[in-house]
Amino acid sequence: MDNKTDVQINNIVTNSDNKLFRKINWKILPIIWFCFILNYLDKSNISFAQLEMKQHLGFNDVVFGLAASALYIGLILFEVPSNIILSKVGIRKTILRIMILWGSCTVAMCFVTTPELFYILRFLTGVFEAGFAPGILYYLSLWYPDNRRAQAVAIFYTATSVARIIAGPLAASLMTGLDGLWGLRGWQWLFIGEGLPCLLFAVLAYYILSDSPDQAKWLTNQEKQRVQELVNKDGKVEHHFEKRHLIELISDVRIWICGLIGFLILQATLGLTFWQPALLKTLGLTIKEIGWYSSIPALCGVIASIIIARHSDATGERCWHFVITAFIGALGLFLANISIHSIWLTLACLTITWIGIASAYALTWAMPGQVLVGKHAATGYAILTVMQGCAGIIGPIVIAYLKTSSGNYSSSLYFMGGSCVMAAILCIVFYRMRTVSSRKQLS
Image 1: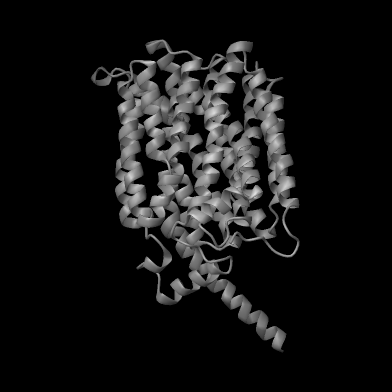
Image 2: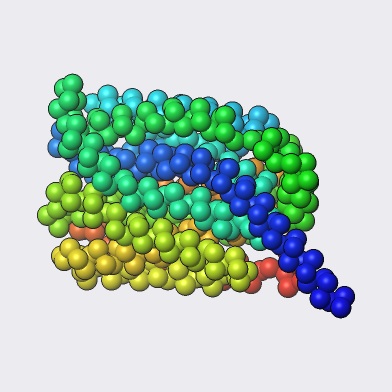
């Protein structure tokens, strides 16, 4: 009888918690999701803009590789300082500052005429965007306990896949539909059209979001306490910055392995993001066709990443979910080498690739929960993002060099596929390092 009563009570508590987190999901995830879509579009819009800028401004592949890397140099230099500020002023003011500045810089890209100005504006875009993604990850750690966080993070990161779906058609529409309007080229309208909405969403996020559960007016006092209770089970999140936390974080080998895993997966992800339109152009497609065809693999990546992350949460298994998806991504990249002259076979291989790497990248952000428990999570996530951000510097340059030296994308595809394989191997190493009884917490 007692066992039956305990089961009933547990079911009631579980149902109540599910209802509470559905309420939280609908309140905070949509706005940060839309903001992240804009963030991704601003990072990747030069991949489509280059299709016209090369011709109109005379820029080559190396120029675009350096410009793509310049953004991540800015990100790396200012990622940690931005998140230290976040922990002091809160997410609302941070998003307001970041989005207004990066949106303005994106609009200013329409005035680019020289490689030097191109590099400067891309660098400044990175400086202004610094702290956004790790800031949101820290923010989610305030709202979600570990056993619910992977799905929340996966939903957040589906924004990048959705952005890939709409990036092509949107870029094609702006570049072909507005070309010549007010004397501006299509690529100039691309930057204007993707920069201005950032200003609007900056204001919306400021008024819709709450800095933490205890400040949410839309939660009852009982709901606030319950959220805090569940989150604190994984270790109390500290909001202030201490130098010793930074030293402890960078001296933990697991942080470095987490960062390297994310670096390798992001290297493949960013490489494919920046060069996929150019790769498709080699098949004789128009800008409009490239835009629409690019959305097919991305759509499959969105669906797969949600399903796989949900299954990972339900089973509590992380390692093999990541390993298998990383190998799937590598397989798609390797197979693309033998289908690079066929449009439909190439699209099939790109679809396999995005299913793998989109799912794997979402799962990389479930791993830090094994390390960043109970300590200065904002700084920890910023450090990991800095490590991963190095992929944005190295990847585009290496791929541009490989493409220029070989005259095709074959070696680049092998390079990205190899990165996925190495990430899978490191993931196995990371999870073997965990203690059997419990997670080791930094203190």
